Length: 424
Image (cartoon, rainbow, N blue to C red):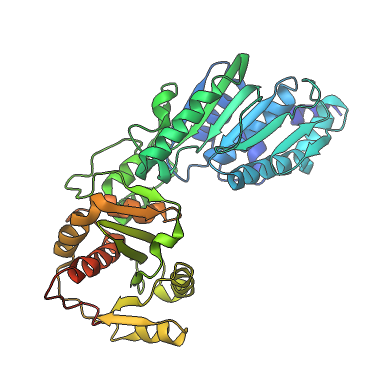
């Protein structure tokens, strides 16, 4: 029994060893052990920034399970961007607590069973919880959820800042307002734990304590070859923010103004659709719907790093949902293949031969319209981000290319000697 107790104590004292026993074999003492100990044992507010794919959330899930048994008198509120994000983490913490490893260690140390008395997609309460009756020990809240009447001793934010905050000032201000509201629900003597990846110089990290920064080289989790491959696959400003944890201007960027948004899908009704197709490699398939109304161009966009065949059904469904027809596509490269596939699927295709230099087209038509474009909410943030990161030397230009074709169509329709590049 003494040996079992010693083994259990060793595991609960060594979060990386515990993680390995739970099946998280990629965790390392540096940095993951450092992060988990900080989550569990820090007494002051803590902010940790780490690059994408660094296992921040996995460390937080292990840390939450340990906090719940180490401080059973403390209530915890956990925030992520959406309710689905919350459910993912809460379910993971439940699995850790109910695992044979965790249960056996707890029993070896205390001689009692650890029981979950309440659990759902957003809450966990353990039998040892000793705070006021009726409140949950761990409560997850999506960033849009109500904080009215809530109070907690430990408040954790994880990835409440994402790509939406990068492309939308309104989203940044919304996230910052919610973070400020959290200050009012922290109990006296409580603490904050903040984790995530920066996206914009004015995002909510600007309100948090100075972060510990763990970039892609400091963590040692990525090889130089992996780093260089990622660097080539995205805009420099996006790589700098997500992997080097620094903000740089998009040098030569054409689209600086923050876009506007609408919730009304009827703004796209009777518009047209466009597909910029990828046929392999690192290219993206971009899909756009657009309609002009006076001096406003309404746009909706999707973006996938996939072969067009894999996403064509989604494109057709989206065009139908928004009542946009025809679906335009260039016929130069594929000799009309995509148009045939669109027609075979029961949608109306439109084809054109592209003769205009891509940079000239984007810098002429899309740039002209940019200040008067309103995006439909639901547009892929990555679609807008690729436009805003576009420069003459950009690695990827599929989204701005597709959007510029929509802009060119409506721009040319207003001229007397109009000849549609789409052949209509």
